[in-house]
Length: 140
Image 1 (tube, rainbow, N blue to C red):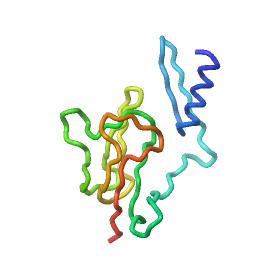
Image 2: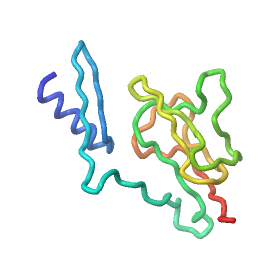
Image 3: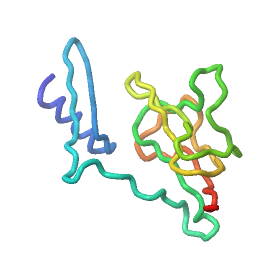
Image 4: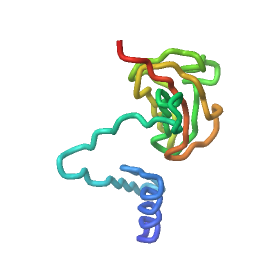
């Protein structure tokens, strides 16, 4: 692997907001990780609301944190993790994104009801692509 290829990897990481990248090819292995900012690992901000209208303020969009292939179920013959109308809790698995032969579970960031699924199973997704819209539940 030469410096041009490493430069392309760094550019890819920058473009897609990747924090870590690992590649093994022809017996060579490269692993690149961005350093943590001073003060430790950043904590994610609050869920983002969709749209500007008051009716949309209770919707949270779950976005792809990585690029890869989107799957709604753990196997082709398995039931989907979630469907429109399902109630989810924070941490529930919503889907899997396969990236470089690794299966990454994408979990819900909030409690609520799945109101829209933006991607079909088997489709490629990129960092930031919308995956799900979840209507949050009011605090009880």
